Length: 107
Image (cartoon, rainbow, N blue to C red):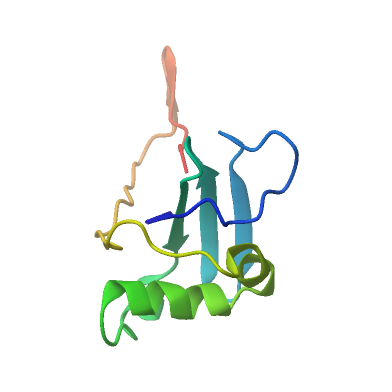
């Protein structure tokens, strides 16, 4: 989800410095992009998303309100494109290490 540049920065040089905000049901990513745009998304267990009522934007704002630190950073922010949801991108593997390779996560 992208929001306007009214998302409060954490420091002087913000672009590209990813922040993570934890809350009781998972975590948020906050990625400052260029031109005052910030990408914000929420990650949590499927049980949290089963409570989805209404549209994606309303659900995301409700989730943000559950994080006091992210609520403060987004006070006055607005959506600049529609919020979207996607499915589970979890994978499992029986071997984490082998000859010449190691399996690591990216998120």
